[in-house]
Amino acid sequence: MTRTVAVFNSMFIVRIVLCFTLVSLILVSGCSSSPVKLQNIAKSDVDLVSDRHIQKNNELIRTLTIKLYKRNPRELAKVPGQNINSRLRQLFMHPGHLMFTELQYKQSIDAILLGFDDDYKGDRVFALMVGLRGMLYKAYNEHTEMFILDSLDAQKLYNSARNIEILAWRLSHRRDSNGKLFLLTNSTKSLSNLSFERLFGKMIAVQDMLAEIIADRSQRTINKIVQSIVFLPVG
Image 1: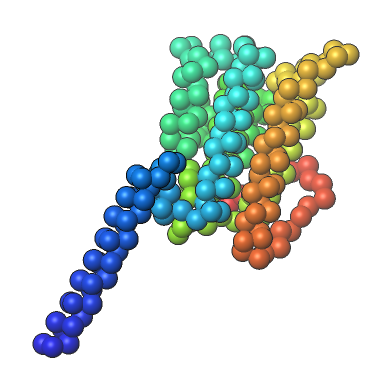
Image 2: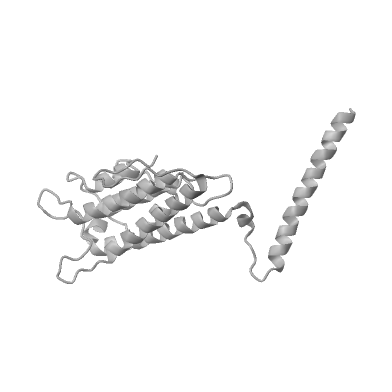
């Protein structure tokens, strides 16, 4: 009986301490000139840095989607009733459930490959963006933001960066049975519009930087690949 009371008292004290700590943090953040968000209390510095990298690439995917549709308006016209905003909502509403009948329920790298399939008659921009968004979601271990108990895999992040390189290369070189590029990106004129190339470069840099940060934190070596023409696994 005495032991039970002692355990109860110990648990009660721990709860009081935790409550006091949380209240103190809230009061401090409220009095501070730059208040701390409550959810950030459960984040390490690396979590906050990871969040920013994830947010940045989501912003870049959104920009890339808009640019691809504007450069290839015929793709959007393949599905009646769709517009750029509705496609963006589909891409960002439920990142863990990017499965669509029109894409034969393909996800991640499989959806990207569908976009380069000569027999596919659907919206190739949507296929590629669903694939890219899903592939990066897997590279982030299916997290949209990071907390203390979450973790990332540096190798997956590194592989995803190489996959973005492969996607960018295929967009510039892969052609259909009629000899035409599947999708138009950079201009072929003498003064080339390299805005797509810059976008991909930023995405690759974000993934590589985050991979290095996570590798340093976990003290694990990344298995680096010199060159690849096939997409690498991301989980």
